[in-house]
Length: 263
Image (cartoon, rainbow, N blue to C red):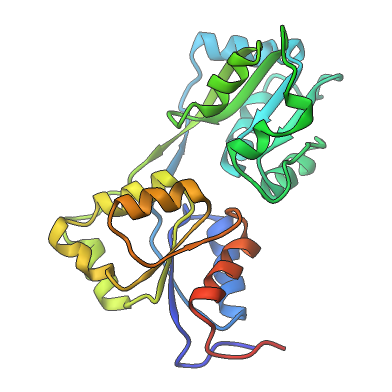
């Protein structure tokens, strides 16, 4: 059933593309009205360095290959498959969540996922990644990031390399533009996909404009991002079990019930 005119307005901040579009479709079907304003812009690496090309060529020398996001899978698979039209045998593949695993599966890779805790900490808890002495691990990721996996795997005795196959950038908005859009949309909730997205959201609001979202619910994908939101002064925080569509919608429904019943 479609939402009626009193459906709560929700702002989706995922990067533009299928993941954002799919979430908006589900939200509208659940009785919400949606707006989109990406808090991250994604760009493929224009050209790999010679060192990165060596990592790609040496793919068959690794024990474990870890994709830390759906975007890492989307951009990383293109990088890897340029040199490997057929995947080498004997590798252990890992995906941070179900969406990432589905992208890998579409390219013929069966990956292990951590379950509900679709975070770096969830991956680190997997039994297969505990004893890593002399194992080689390739982490497929974007530029920057927390570095939690690199640090933990290294401490467990692994030789770790990182393939940064895309970059994330804060969207370019004119001063005051985000505040103006929030004022116009009056969202009951903002869905934040990552800590970096939350940082960009606050960066695009001048201090005086933060009152625009003072009463707005912030739906975040983890306790870590919730702590960040609290430190940034947000008061109404809803914590999802992970960043998946289902988990984010469940957390939203607990804080901001939809306006219509579903059939």
